[in-house]
Length: 333
Image (cartoon, rainbow, N blue to C red; front, side, top):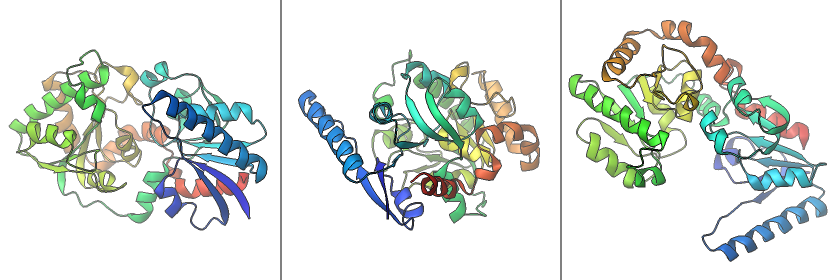
């Protein structure tokens, strides 16, 4: 039986990718502690465990489900004879690349051409353009989900840290989200459209309280229950509204009508298509763009955005990215 190391546990991989792979899997999890000395000791233990597994069990492949792990980047440098499969799990932007150090990404399994271009600063042994495993698993479980229960779906991008720093208007992500939600609130006062707010957190946290205080009387606030419910809400809505959410880009690649709102932060956007991207933060512009999308047919949207959809995730990968990952693991293990 072939042996691999799986770095960072992902329940979806256990259930849909690795469960019948006939591999012996050694799981390693990276943990961070607030205490400096405990953190250092934990890192030393991690290195020792890693080298022990590699040498004692003659492991040839490491599968990493964390895209930007500094630890894995160092391991790739130290172990040139080992294959490292690094799998992208969220979209990244030029804004984030400015802050990110140059990394070793080994065999980098990324969403598509746009992500390949943005990650060009890193050391990559080989690119595998495979799409999103999470979205393809969702699609394989729900091949014909288009019930259209809601007119609008708003995908939250508030994290615990950003909620705490709401007044930090020097942070482009916070500033842009506040402008977006100001326009959305004004729009919902004018139009009686049904809307669902897809949250990130899995409990009634500060994120829930934030949306209840700002939109509580205007739509359904959905706390995230599993990996797939945000995808389901987007597929069940006529138009999805977001700043630059990963899951919204995944849905966009599948021809769901999405309106992205990076405003003047061009390094927070992946596509530059006027049909679905707003670079002007005025309400009149927001209203006109959203109404146009609501009136537009799916065929029209496809015609005007197809090339950008394909660059985000190739159409051939939408329902089989998780199967491609399985094949690639078998190939290199």
